[in-house]
Length: 161
Image 1 (cartoon, rainbow, N blue to C red):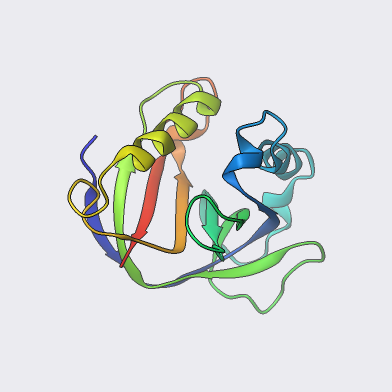
Image 2 (cartoon, helix red, strand yellow):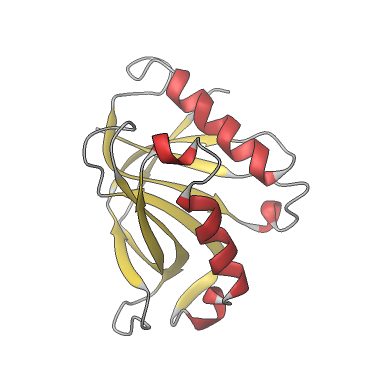
């Protein structure tokens, strides 16, 4: 999987947040699957004001160090402004940056997304990824290709220095 490189302007996301780390997430009792359940069960998308479109973003930010450390995980949607943040939600800015874009395989979302992240971890940052990771913000983009959880394709955006 060869990444493409894009430059993105900053944008804001409103959603629900949890603090976690990859060691917790691989145990089978991670916080990320629970956040997804809450996002859909609690109808979070319908409660987000000023949505730009129906695309869902899963943002990884506020890294303590690198992928081995703690980070914030936010599931939400891109918004045109953050003047109204509903109770229990947060607003986060995804910074202007260069991003490596990797497209997952198609399949069961709970399998293709972790597999795509494993590929990210296995890439040589300087050569195969297109640069060193910045560990400021990374995100997954869930658009019309991921509406069916049994047959999904997701884009991973990896922030670069």
